[in-house]
Image 1 (cartoon, helix red, strand yellow):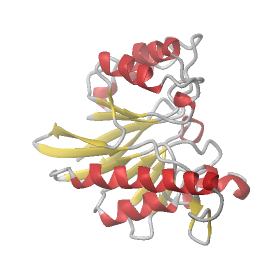
Image 2 (cartoon, rainbow, N blue to C red; image 1 turned 90 degrees about the horizontal axis):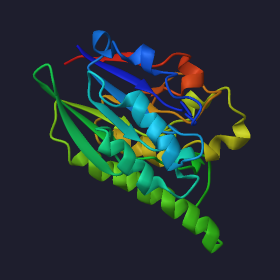
Image 3 (cartoon, rainbow, N blue to C red; image 1 turned 135 degrees about the vertical axis):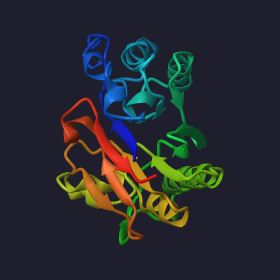
Image 4 (cartoon, rainbow, N blue to C red; image 1 turned 120 degrees about the vertical axis):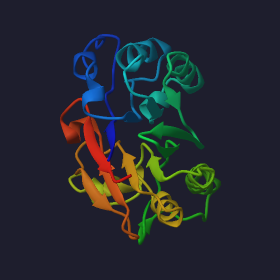
Length: 237
């Protein structure tokens, strides 16, 4: 059994140093890898990124992350990424990484994702250039996820995003904002590429569990949903 720990939406500010670390020091007793599903900072500053690094660096298991919308807010996403990677936290945006765990190869493909909505209630690539740019960005990011997943030659595949690939894990959020919480294109890619587990955050008032139309397990690991420093999921190896 491969043990996957995951959390998102920790929203660490400069006053939060040390908040999570005590719960993480013995992470290896519970998990083989830790996946971070974005919104690691409050406002996406380099100073906050150093707090995130202090919390999640030098853990006894590999740490892999994607950024979220909060991590982009100050237009310093590249600098935030550098701080995290300089501290050994792998940050994915359209890439995949292969981890050797228990003699098995576990692949993680990650993108931030984007909004757009879900089948029957989604934005369309039509009309004003602003709308076409919005939907075009959604499509582009979904294709980045596809490329990352297809690059993995592994025994197990995990899709890590910030935005949701399905509406089911958004239940509890106002339906009016579903288009800003995820998009169906991510779910289609996940089903096309044979994913074993999909993890996302972003939906603070959503629910934890759902499945794609093709039957892939999806888990919303936003900290306000899981209500702990991390949640753990098992994958049969």
